[in-house]
Image (cartoon, rainbow, N blue to C red; front, side, top):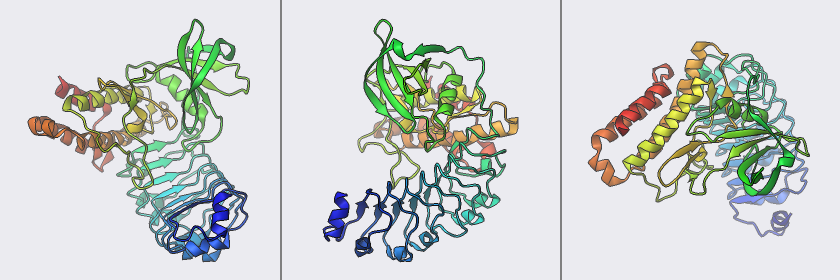
Length: 436
């Protein structure tokens, strides 16, 4: 409401970013006074259902958020916005994405939690598209034209009605982060797990440790002041899919030195929320990186002074390769193998967390299983590239043969022919040989 008042008073002339959430049913006319300056517009949390034809006048606009509104159809006027690259329509009522309704330069499209039953063939014309968020719709298939989206790196298609994963999808040369749980083509049944059931009344909640897309993490005391981390799931569609699938994947993963230990499953929540009890991580563990931003799109962000010795790099890479090997042996794709989901301490010991995008694919055909693993290998290649780019100069000079061997491994992980990429077990073996 405050920004709307400033806009109406003419106090936002020249503004590059505007956020308004106050029940709007139409675009304020005063907003068109900013057509030459506005770059980021966030009108999420209103009651908008359409955009005026004059919207094409926003010649500098590159980012548009319209989540939690009343759109039923993606407005075709968006195709006329020359610089628009990121569009967010999460949690509307969208059942139709018309042909040729998206801008040519689109890089990032968010249509999570809507009612789409199909995608237009014209999606294949968006050759710059890197990030596509479609979890929580009603898609039963993907158009073959999507095979032309050669730059697509991250795809969320969980919680749809897909009966198969097309062969061409798993051969996209840059696809690295794929979430596809809660579809008929996946095995969604979790059986024979022996995880302890822990009742809400056995816990004393201390304080919040963090919050993610799928849930709230709190510190809790269990029984004789045994400290644990409690993750309470929100129980709604997230950008990655259903929280229940995250919980099932975390349980199915089992124990591993480089995964956060799952202690028990929560029962008796007063609001009937699902939850997991996890091992409490020591305070000296920190996130390796920060999540991608609007500019980086699919790549993590590191602090300006982030650097790693060769020993640190090898220790981190070895740990994560070992964890990924274990997961794929269990038939689990992490789906979000990123630096921002990795915790490290001062000794560079690593833990891979956040199973929000994980998918259990154990019952799928062997050829598909092979392709799914090689797809995630590219994500590891991106991580290895980021670490190598931040190697300390002295180590880069003094250990050039080792660096070159790691660069070769990185290039093998990133090669565009997916079936020629190494397995995680091979990657782990190579790093172990270098480390020793």
